[in-house]
Length: 151
Image (cartoon, rainbow, N blue to C red; front, side, top):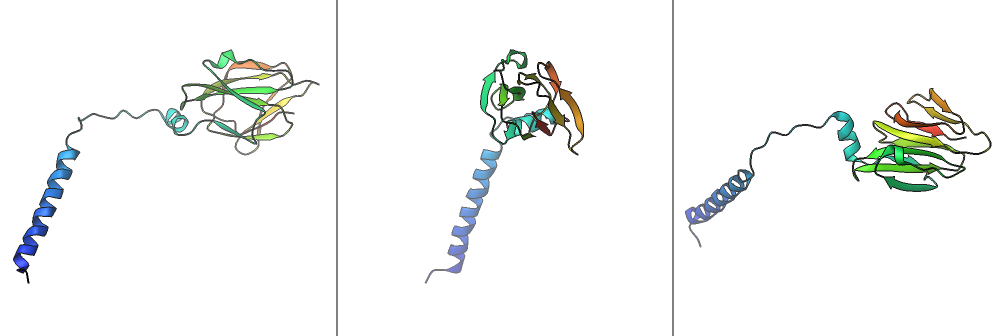
């Protein structure tokens, strides 16, 4: 039978080595002051902007003003911090689309046919703006927009 003191000594040595190893790794990284990103960028960086239900088409472009929009669609572009560019959603099917992580400025083009007017709504369902067919903006603030009815 082993002496209780030797068992305690082994456990004590293992515990001491574990603490020293943890301390060594904790201090090997250089000390840097983290500068927090603005809240709007943090939200955008966490998740890409998305739309539900799924849009007809999704493409990425380097600049919000670079979007082209095929006839019959309402196209909306929002900055995608996970990709470092703008994601463009082609909203073709007549429905209400729910937006997530649309932060900051983007753009839209209403290329719908038959005079379809798109409507952008806020958090409480309040109408923010109406965009007639042919309407567009190269710098639209998406922050207050929670949903879009494209027809």
